[in-house]
Length: 120
Length: 265
Image (cartoon, rainbow over all chains, first blue to last red; front, side, top):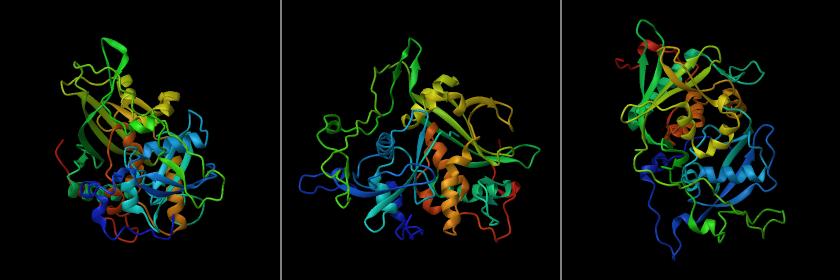
């Protein structure tokens, strides 16, 4: 990840219960707004040719994981792991918009991904 | 100490010693208490060994007994309707990319939600009991759990496999015996489900390696639980990532198992 390894200064916003409700904006809901995501491979995992993506805030980590898996043409016996802040695997149901609020820097969310046959 | 890699540094292999495990658990517990997240430290009678424990309620897919091939889906996954119609793509390449994919739209046909027939006879609410133990043979934490309906019926292994989060389902189906099996709880001697620890190192290594390179530390238990928890319905709030520090290696360890806050069994 970037050099910014410290916690966000506004730690309150990492509590999903205090995340602001989406506001109306010219007829577009907050979930349709997109955030920039930078995907970084770790280890022997193949590097995606396209690393920067604009992702709707409301999309889940699972959705992104499925997308990467298909992009990498992963086998059914392989599992993709995604890490935020290079220290934590967000829940598959977590919205990327929330991750961006907590861990975004320089206008983007950096996520590391790793392919493995591992389990447990 | 936590160790990962091949240098002389403290962090030089992807294993965890018991003392550091206890320290990680203590720090984990402090945050759990502040969140009322329900974790506690349990001591085993007549022993200094202990483990983290949490009881939680959750929804799960249950095969109805009348129709074993029909799965009652209690999840609502995040597939939006216009997604299915292919009208908008949730993933578009960033415009600054040099490649020629800019005009392509990558459609994500999210099939995470499969809504089948609702069976009013199955309650769908399951009580989970999670235990985090230290494994001496693997030198990693291990997640044990058991699950039962509110009426007290224990879930079968097949039902537990059915309840695995869709994100991990395909991999599970390829090797269910690699992942979740039924074993005797090493401290309690009762039958529990367990998430296999044999390859914990593989998904911990990227995190530990990065931390090593950046001269920072991670809380092994937090990172590990964030990966394995969601597989079996255990939610680990995001604040654990930012609010739980790594154990300090310089301070003396006050965290021998008896010193941890305990509850009677």
